[in-house]
Amino acid sequence: MPEIAYYPGCSLQSIARDINEILFEVFREFGLSLKEVEDWNCCGSSSVHNINPEVSKRLAWRILAKSASFKEILVICPNCYYRLKEGLYALRFSSNQEEFYSFFGCEPPFDIKIVHFLEFLSRLDWSSFSILSLKNLKLASYYGCSLFSPPHLSSEVLRMGIIEEILKKLGAEVILWRYTTQCCGTYLSVVRPDLITDIVSQFMLESHKKGIDALVTPCVMCQFNIEIRCKIAKMIPVFHLIEIVALSLGKIEKKYLKHHFIDPIPLLEGRGLI
Amino acid sequence: MTTLRSIVVERNIVPEEPDILEFHRLVLSSIKKYGRVHELEVMLGFKFKKRKIFEDILLGLKMLAKKKLNIHPSKIKEIKKIEQLF
Image (cartoon, rainbow over all chains, first blue to last red; front, side, top):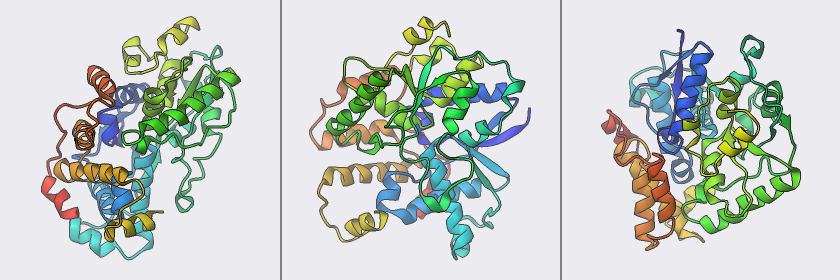
């Protein structure tokens, strides 16, 4: 089976361990084996980037140095994706090469490509897979705030509408709503849970008004944060996009859904999808 | 924003919400120690320091039950290299 380099990042080894397992399962179905970057470290997103951007850059560089033998690296977390791209950008467009060499003893991998799993999904030929149609599900995308920034790292493929296109290909009914790119406040979730509860509860109220069955996000942190911080009575589950892909490929089992803090099993059983 | 935040840190300015900076520092020290974030240690460290140990305790227990928190940190092999990057 052909191998593809994969950078998981810290959250895929802890709060999103189940999403990581589903990702491996889905890629096996695609005929690809994910190979983790050897001895990978934190990409330097969020906290490091916030208070020490230089260290953040070097942490991303070490991952690039470790991946030098690959042509591309698959990344699932939007924050990790941008930290790695930012690190590569700093190498390509500024005079950082000597600093890179002094730390890692090798030439920077200028030509390596950082691929977000959404880009990968968007170029897939879905007709070659047996798809369970999700026609009974009304889904809305939740991109979160980090997938489309910053502008100098923008990708032609990653754009608004990419999730909706994938959901439609899988047969789901797509509902548009107003909070699709509003920040859910993940990074303040530990420090200011009160503030975050207000934000994500607004999301849920709006979802009810629009008749949405579930939200679908490409970000493991958003998926987790919205589910744990929502405190209103009527809550809908938040899926990671890879769960929805696995569901339509017939690769999701109930045991994979136990990680949710808002149980999605009654919804999926009720629609005859599991 | 990143530049402004860096200035605040460099000049030891006390921000409007110092807890946020303190939380970031705990994450940073976790990465320096292990190469990756050890969420359990960071969360416990923050809640203890702020004397809010009962805030989120149920959530923490649920996360442990769902195996969303690693009891032991995941430490990378080349930890000396990470220290050099700081």
